[in-house]
Length: 118
Image (cartoon, rainbow, N blue to C red):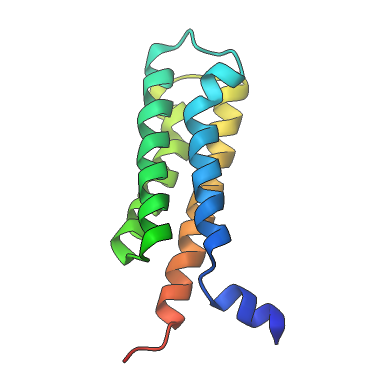
């Protein structure tokens, strides 16, 4: 029963995890020393900032639209290596981090649906 309650209730650790993922996405080109592909660097910075902003909004006040925005941003960062044509460790990290952001957003949306109304 404790496990079910842990997953069915929105927790602030989820928002903090989103913030950590956002920062790691934005800084990944420099951390991985893969800054030669300009589009990948700009994409990482912009997508990371969008995810950061949405996670911070969700931390202050849970908003369903912010969770949908996180889902969309996670999907974009996951497919952006294929769309923009960059590879290496940055490609792997962005694909994995994008999937993690999507899973986190899906969990938060599921929790929002389970919240009692009224």
